[in-house]
Image 1: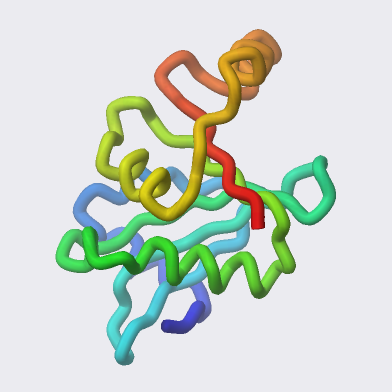
Image 2 (image 1 turned 90 degrees about the vertical axis):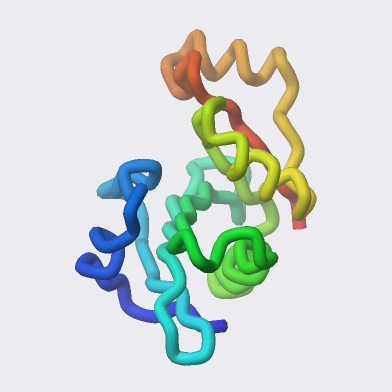
Length: 133
């Protein structure tokens, strides 16, 4: 698996790409396996804690459910020397929530969620997951 230059045309070809809205603060990569483009992964550095950030990922339909999310995120962690990785996911995206929990992400505390919502950093229809490395 490799992370290569972001291919916007490939991103737009993924049927449900609206589940991964592009963020101007993020750096995006095309995820490649066996010379095939399988998905897009993005990284947004966090202001705190140190060596932390947010991941965004979407795989083409035919590559989902094959354990590739963990591999792609591990490459991102290595590339950016990440110690804490966050994922903000729509509550309705149960497949993504399940995939992230399966690879070691946990929901942040209710107190943290409420605090983030009060400050406008987390919408009511979103949850925040975290994984420490």
